[in-house]
Image (tube, rainbow, N blue to C red; front, side, top):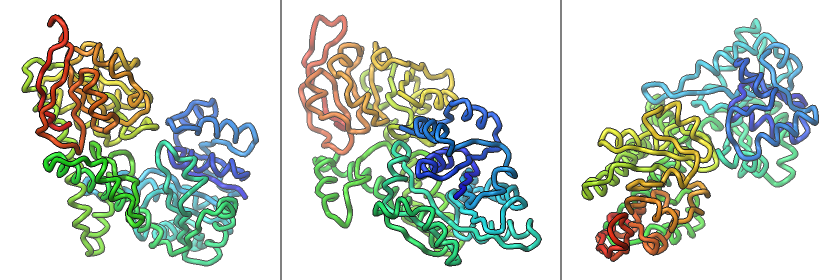
Length: 461
């Protein structure tokens, strides 16, 4: 079977490379000729663990190629996947113009037996609209259009494809459903569940799933706030809650709010879909507002602590990607927190193992960028951990404390135990742990004649 991916972005590249690894002939098509040229030369447009190696493997085997020629690429395709962008509009809905353009572009070249599959995340009813667009460009000759939403997590996308929790296929005729089941047979035979349903159901499944996961993140952040004020520890609470099989432990870690290309956009689109169909989603609407507020609140926690010291001026941000194992900075906490600190007069440094180039384009020269972790923390008054990279989890806290001028470690991913940080002379501010517990901490004060014993109210630890 011949598979064509329209769109060589994150979803198209990953899905295309994974299909090629199953033995299919795959062509990833993109209208960006520069991107296509780079891919042919082995230059990756994104960072995803294992993807570059998988692409090299597919190309060497002759199963994976790249092209900017839509017509020649889709002419003999059995499946044409639309994996183009669906950005948010100003009212929170999604812009389907790229999907519509892709449908119009492929329509004249499709064979009569081809199945068009929408991989992009789209609102309910899009597959039917795309089928009408294609038919209008083919003198009324219908082409089957199915929905096959992706559930790939950035940082673990290849494993998510190969060991998926489920494969969801929305098709409004049995033939298309059976064709896609055959395409996915290698995964189904490994035990991956196959869910066949209507196109509208499949489109809603993707949004409902992401909205629910985002709700878990928002919920545990609210629970963390209760723990801080009530004298609890969110780690213990989350474990006790998550061991309930009905709930599960995934997405029950407090942090600086969700970001990336999916959850912010998909929650907004889900809320907009609810309004369109006269079925408002108040839980999701509240979540969207709370998530943005979360980032601002954490920025002001930093300012509240540093402002009280009267001397802190330089802050190092560790992690600008929205999560670890990706270079995606879209709607990351850093993009909200850094400008707030800068407007308050703080000088900001930043470090990220993979996302620095992406973040530079958005934050520019106002941030002092560092390639080396320990150089980034040298001489600063505070360190703020925003991304859960293993580089930060493994960093030497003793060395960090020695290099810093100040002693505040804002651990907004709860990577460290408070006692480990305080043992090295750092004042540890984490999420979801009791505040108001004064603790005596030895802090090495530069030029102060040795360590000083100070009493610090953990606010919050």
